[in-house]
Structure formats: structure tokens, C-alpha cells
Length: 456
Image (tube, rainbow, N blue to C red; front, side):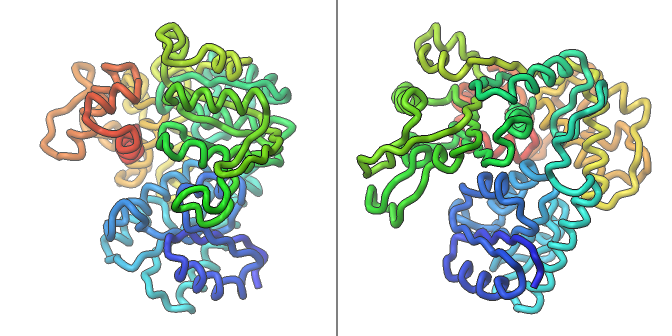
């Protein structure tokens, strides 16, 4: 038996039971989860050696899109994660896509026991190799940077003076329990800064729980954040702790807090004031001990003036306010970030590419980067996959993406046109997700999925 932690995520309870029955005889701990929405919490706090992830949940039937989306989320949270995708529907093309997207392997259902076991054992060995490359464990990614050098957080670099100052402030704030409000455009790295504050705090060995408030329907808000008891509503088959309880003793990161409606703001304010939660369907209150970090890309002060955001809630969440500048305002960080991503992806894809050409560096610094660090990371990943050279050149990045005359190129590829429309709308509304979604005729959740897909 290997001393290793394995996570299996699938919406079919029979599959979960069968896979766990097989693997628990060979691994010291096997956890199962049928709700993919819990993946961020589990990956953030579980330190799993291998993850077996289904490719199809509720959104569609056989395309595998959900599996790819969740794979991206997992690797954003833990770049060292080793993921094996499995599904009842698959072919060679999907297997190749899975490998390019960052999966270690691909297993078809119904699986052969020996094949599945061998694949998961190889995944655990791969995890050990990944940890060895960065000095032992994912925690090594949070080590303190040398001044003027990129931080070891995958999306967070402190080379520019403004980012060095921001990092120094974050370090001072981290050792307190002060609530923090992180401001910045989409893709600037707000969640990375929040996680950095947690890792530098006295709560570092406790849970760090991420909640995307923009993706929670209003009808599920109380259940997701405060929990529910069995029978509280139709689908409440069992008691379940909410995100506040899951984060007890640690840090709760409330992302996109500017998207909350006024009724939800009132409920959140009550919990923050009383430091207690009551599960839906129960009348018992529970004390909570959590450090709160919030983030938004919206002009929160203007929203208070317009009475779309409660001033008393703002007072509760912004004891310390940290603003991450967009990438275009800190060009000194572009090359260090590019080099950091280059190192990460050349290891991931086993490519021999080691440097950036002078011409590429010049164009990287000239480009506007409307998608900020997230867009840069996606561009580097694509370049590493496609390049045939040891040194990255301008042509390895998106064709004509860096022209001085226009950010947008003429194309008849539907996906590229959709990406350009999103970028244009983001620029028009200064990153306001609600307005952009309205302009494009999408729900906020659909817009988030497309932004993740295109690296925006």
C-alpha cells in the first residue's frame, strides 16, 4: 500500500463506490466527492497526491467540456496537481486534448482494474517528481522572494516598485486578523494575493476556502455559505456545512463580492457582525472563527454612492484595502511573469524551450494586456505547446496580437471572434462583469466560463 491521498470526483455514486473499493486497498486515503462545486475547497485544503476527475457532470452529456473546465481550475489552485480524467465517452482526439490541457492521463469507463490502478500509481509518482522540482511541496511555492525577483506564487510577481510595496503591505497585514478588500481588474491575481496573505498568516495550517459569489445563484446563497440540515429543501438529502463552517479557524475568501444583491449583502453583514451562522432549516446558531478576505473588480466606492452596495458592509470588509494594478501599469513585471510561466509549462509539457527573444520581449511590453496576468499565462502556455524552437519568438504567440494599430484581428474563426468580442466589451465597461454579460446577452456564469476558456 502506498502512503498517498487520492481524490475521486464523479456525479455517479456507483462509480465512486466501485473506484474507492478498488483503490482503498492500495492507497492510504481515498476521498470521494459527487459535487464538483466542492473541488476548489478540496484541492486547496486536501494536498492530494492524485485526482481522478470525471469529464461530464450536469452541463452536457458527452463533450467533456466540464472536465476540461475543472481541470483548469484545479491547476490554477495547485500547479503541481496530478489529474487523471475519466469518462464513458472518449476517443484519441479527446485523450490528446486532455494531455495538452494538463492531465497526466486519460482512462475510459468501464475501466480495467489493473489499468486504473497502474495509472493512479503512476500519478502518485508524478506528484512526487513535481514536488521535488520545486523543493519539496506545494507550500514551497509560497516562499519569500528575493527583492526585485519574481515571487514563487504562480500568478504573482513582485518585480516592479508598486508590486514590491504591495507585497510588503500584504506581509504586514497577513500576521493580523484584519479583514482585507482586494481590488483590481479581472485577471490581475486577486485570489493569488488572498492566498498569499493566508499562507503568511497565523492561520496558514488551517483551511483556505474560496467562494465565487458571482457564480452562486441567489436561491442557493444561504445554503452554500451557511449550510443546511437534512430536509431543509427538496434536494437536501443530508446535513451539510456551509463555507463559513468549512473555513473555521482559517481564511474565507469571498471573490466578486461586488456582484451580491442587496438582500444577500444584508444576510452576509449579519453573519460578519455576529460571527455566528445558522444552517438553513435549523434554529441553532454556531460560532465561527474565520478571517475574511474579499475581492471585486467593480468600483465599490461608486456603488456605495449609487446605493447598490451597503456602506455598513463596506466598512466591515475593508479594514485594509489593497489594489492590484493592471499589468499595463507595471510593465517591469511582464518579462519575469513570462519567464515564470515558461518554466512552469516547459516542465509540464516536457518541452525544450528556455528563453525569450529580444523581439518578443519588446512586443510583450508594448501590448496592452486587457486580460492581465491571466491572458499572459494563457499566451505563454500556447506558445510553449506550439513552438518548434528553443527560444520563443513573436510568431509563437497569437498572430498579430501585438500590433500597434489594433488589438483585434480579422478572423472568421468563431471562437476567436467570441474571444475578441469579450475583450472589446471588457474594455468598454472597464471589467464590470455584470455590464459585460448584459452587453453580450450572457449570464455571469456563462461569461465566466468563456473567460476561463480563453484565458481572459
